[in-house]
Image 1 (cartoon, rainbow, N blue to C red):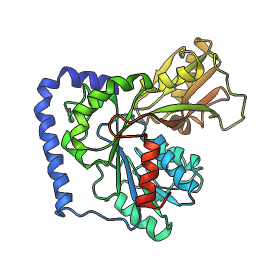
Image 2: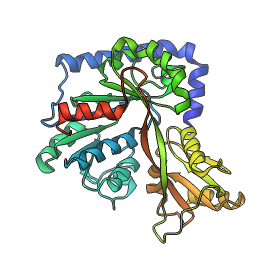
Image 3: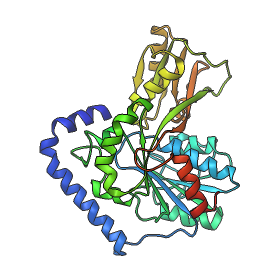
Image 4: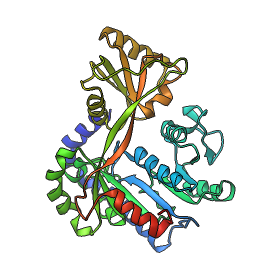
Length: 358
């Protein structure tokens, strides 16, 4: 669905461009209203980090949120992750997610986060000001992380980390909705503290000049990262089998904003391409009919395993058998495209200076 929409946007871009400019202008006016105080914004009493992107689609926000929260936990802090919970219907406002929640109540990504991060507080509420104020009163966190928070200007932040893809710097540059996938125009990037471009290591040399041309005028550091596969975890709620080794015949099922990246990650880890890749819409609510489709496809391709993402695992678990495995990933940081060093070095400096997380 997303790939079809992008192709349609690309073909109609000359016609849709004026609408994109108008949309970006409206969002720029909204930004100024928050900056001048014409619209209310909340200043949290604890350090606040936003992780977001300028475009819709998968850029690796959730793994980076998990990485930051884990670093805070390792430093003895109590982070609270404020997330809207896409397509979730929580039992109450500002709902505190727990590992045994249903995906429909908290959303796939919040469920994945709270299962992966014991000790962190994951609060699901589309109104993150309300969620944050409630968390301060009841949970006593000492750090907020805004998941997908770049355009959520009602909550002020100390650090604004903006994730980009090579396409954001290239063919999608400044193409705002409906002419492209950007949620705001390029002027919004002035708010960023730092940028992280998700790309493969072999693409870094080509991206340097492009990043300098697009982002150099902002005088902000631009780092690179990729998602490194760590292993396979069982999805089935019934029994645990032995993980399939590299070289196993498998099919891939994913419901993410960037299916091509999932395909590449699975291929790298398994040492071979999937026999079949079943692509579902981002945040898809898997049903028993979907599982039947997946299992029939696995049998027809004589696959020994089915791989999915950690995000998809939460929704596939009620149906999956012991052949289904979730591919776990973690950010791996490369050199800077603009600035010195890498993201880890920069983060440690920021954490020590602003957040007391040395």
